[in-house]
Length: 113
Length: 113
DNA sequence: TCTATATATAATTATAATCTTATATAGTGA
DNA sequence: TCACTATATAAGATTATAATTATATATAGA
Image 1 (cartoon, each protein chain N blue to C red):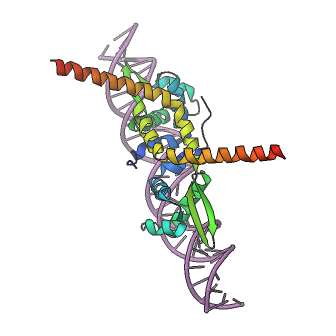
Image 2 (cartoon, protein in one colour):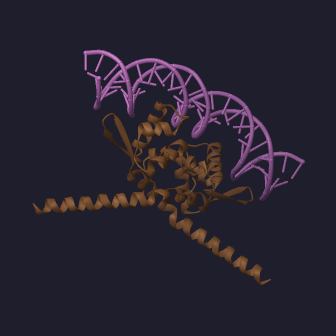
Image 3 (spheres, each protein chain N blue to C red):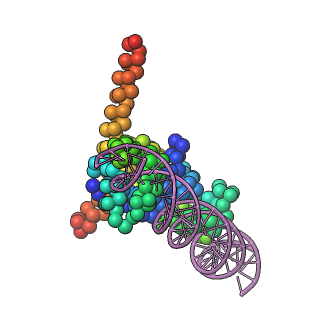
């Protein structure tokens, strides 16, 4: 099995606010200010801190346009996560298939009665 | 895009100890006692608490053998995670492909010089 | 039934993450 | 340069998470 990814990716997506931010950025690149407006319950520094964690986790990248920071989804962090989950993928795909075909069989038996 | 998974899955795998436990259980089902022995830095109640979180996240299932609890990897939680990541999968696969082919081109140019 | 084994739960303490408030940096245009 | 806009960082307060210590539950076997 491959080594586990950097801890920051896992803790970055552990927070529901940051997952919502990823969703928001995913539709199209967004400035920090747009993100602040989109999350009225958060303060500007709060948003900025969350963005830093997403940056460190390589889940977003930033480009500078004058004073604005444009946040874009970045594949690296997601790739890391995907690789980690892939370790278990074979296992759970087999198991779920087995479960499904069992349910299938059960249903068939019931229908036959 | 599908809805996000239950928060517990994300926080369950946020902890490196719990990821190590999943790795240990993944090789083959393990009793709670075996897990305690495998993590000498942790106390028995500590292990038990982590196992509870993995249980709640549907990442493991338990079967009872006399006083022993046998922990087995369970696909549900992983499936949930996988589904969440899949939302972004198309995006990052495209991006990484683009990056790779760019590097490919760059390397070719260098070799041509 | 008594004792040992295996594990879980509860309460407390310690540590880490998040939120707030205040302040700093850096670019823009008058 | 000065005021304004956009964003980041620092420090302290709050809250959540993890570890520790003590205790409970449940089964097995003498």
